[in-house]
Every structure is written in structure tokens, then in C-alpha cells.
Image (cartoon, rainbow, N blue to C red; front, side, top):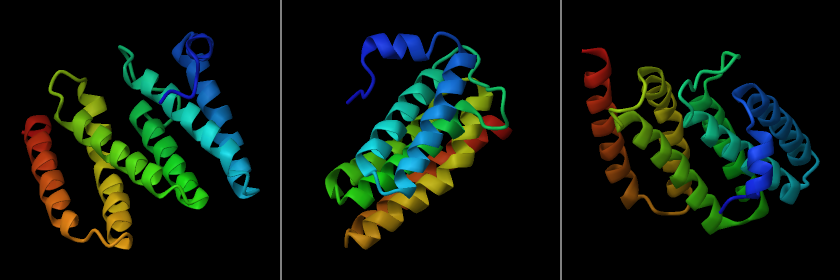
Length: 166
């Protein structure tokens, strides 16, 4: 569910530079809101930051001016969104967010038409998204799903690495 209306999406993503600046602003505001336990505001900020990062990932040149790639930005916003939903006690939404995060990284790794740097960045984020999802599933007593998840992730990482590095 998009948190930004089409008008604001257009305004916040006029250029990659504008999008990066807005991502930074939303992340800062989200962290501040989370620190003060204003979770609904943190949810809005991290969700908007993830939408902006999603736009950046889809650009022709998804590299950013900082050391952080657009994929890293998506992962950071996604992890913070997940943490916020957990803090809010929104169990189903939190699971959906962490699954979405992991599926995004898996998908980016395996999409051969993507630029190499996007796939490499996704591969670099894959272990953290796996750890987050597996930890969450374990905490929720869904241990049986963890083995399948690890096997799926391992296959995707190996396939992607072979394509990228051999």
C-alpha cells in the first residue's frame, strides 16, 4: 500500500538527487519519531523512505551520491519499517514487511536484466534480510519454515553469484 499519493511521489522524486535528499529527511524523521516512541509517525516516514528508495532502484542509474546504494536505501528503510511495526505490535504487518524485504532482495539478485551493481548490492543485503526473517519466524514459532527459507536463499545466492562472478 503506497504511503505517498501520486502528487507527492512526483514531487519527491523529480530527480535522483531530490529523491536522495528526501529519503535522508524521511529516514532522519523516522528515527527521531521511533526514538520518542511515536510509532505511527515513524511508520509513515520509513514507509515513504522505502517508496522513494523503490523509485531509485528502478532508475537507469541506481547508484547514489553517497556510499549507500539505492538497494541499501531500500533495505535500510525496510528494516526500520519492520522494526516499527514490531514495536507497534502489528504482528501480521511486520511479518509481511520483513517477507517483502527478503523477497525484494531475492528478486533483485535473480533478475538477470538488472545492472550488475544492483544485483551485487542485493546479494550483499541478502544475508541480513534472511537473518531478520528467520529470527522473526523463529520468535513466532514458525521454525518449520526456516529451513525452506534458508535453502531457497542459498540457491538464489549461489545462482546469482555464479552469474555475477564467474
